[in-house]
Image 1 (cartoon, rainbow, N blue to C red):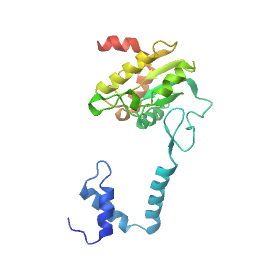
Image 2: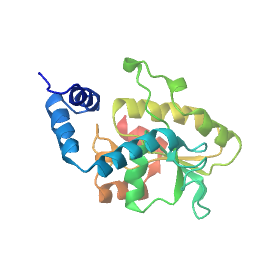
Image 3: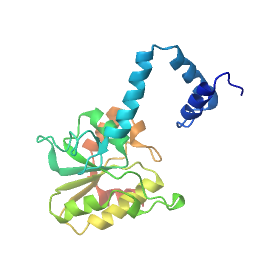
Image 4: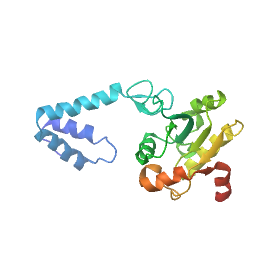
Length: 207
């Protein structure tokens, strides 16, 4: 494609690197921004710069945060001994939208996937193990998606935590096999959390 401006071409190249954005969509977005007021484009640019420079990971749970502790972990009304383990930040958002969970989270940052070369050491697991060893946890809820990788990760964590005096539960399978939490509707997800079952029972159901 021939561009009449090298600046337009550069913008299309950069926008086109975003996931799910092809060249035609990138061009349409670049032309849209070109038609906007300068202040609006500057505001977008500044917000993206702030996103990269100022957003950090919560030192306790791994959630995105503007401070050392995220708002959930820093909230004194949340049950610090009740931890819901999720794959990524989008799962935290999905569960929070239900308004049914009053504990805190632990974000793994992915799931174990040998096919993609992702092992336990690549995930945020050690912090969870340390909390268990310090006796800070009463219950751990496994809330990974019901994919093969999610189930593998859950079983790995179960083996690591089973020797501690912690109740280990899994969300009820209102979530279809192969589904991710972020795509579940709020009612189904809320029921899955509320009706969670002992993890050992979920193993028997799947055997």
